[in-house]
Image (cartoon, rainbow, N blue to C red):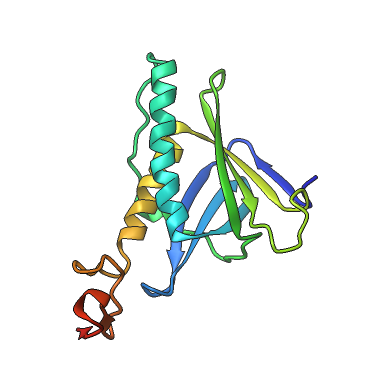
Length: 176
């Protein structure tokens, strides 16, 4: 059984945001319901994977329920910013999702990363219930934030450090 189990049903706001300079940013998922704010640390790669997974998930929902109105990806950038103070509950190790067709609500489930030697059942768990549009807007904003990072080297495909890039495709020569 999880140490801490949080369920916000439904959320008033759910967002992904990052704090810090490109290359040193920390990404967060944050959900708000009334006075309760739950913040979790997430990796940039998890943001990108979540966006791809959610689009596939929504395609399955649309196929199963063809009469559903399409969920919107529109968001207000000012409202998608993370609320301070940023006090993350845990670092996300696993994300999952589900759909309640009766309520037309999506649940985003986040489990804490499992530390070496830690019992798999002894991790924190958070469930955030949101509309399909809230989830699509969250991932659209998350991808926008992720893309504002360091530029990608056209040679090797790795992020470039503004102070200089060590490119393996250039035989180790720095590219400024």
